[in-house]
Image (cartoon, rainbow, N blue to C red; front, side, top):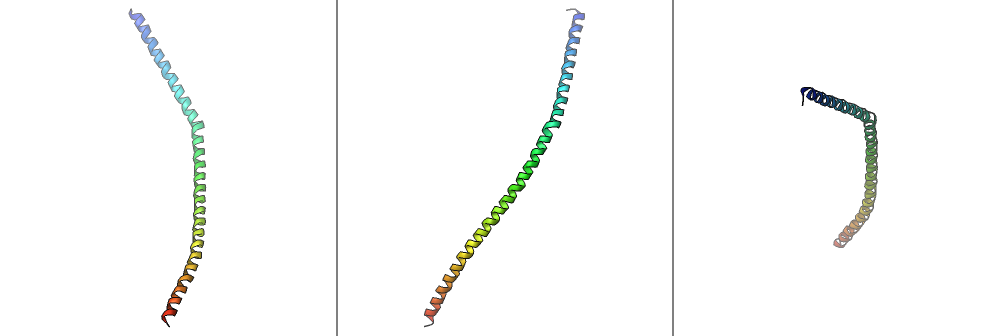
Length: 100
């Protein structure tokens, strides 16, 4: 090939590379704008909702724990009073038998 044709091919290759580089930069800029305008606000909103749901779940868990604690406390108080009466009755019976 002649040197003129080689120069033309080289110039065309450099032009194509520069055009491709410019297009890549344009796509990159467009992608950054898209992420900034749409993705970041959506993620921020989702994070806020997740935080609210977490706080609500913690509050519900505390409420359930308090109810369970009060229910168990009521059950053990009722059982312990009957157990106390039964023990005192047995002790009274034994002491009464021993005092004769």
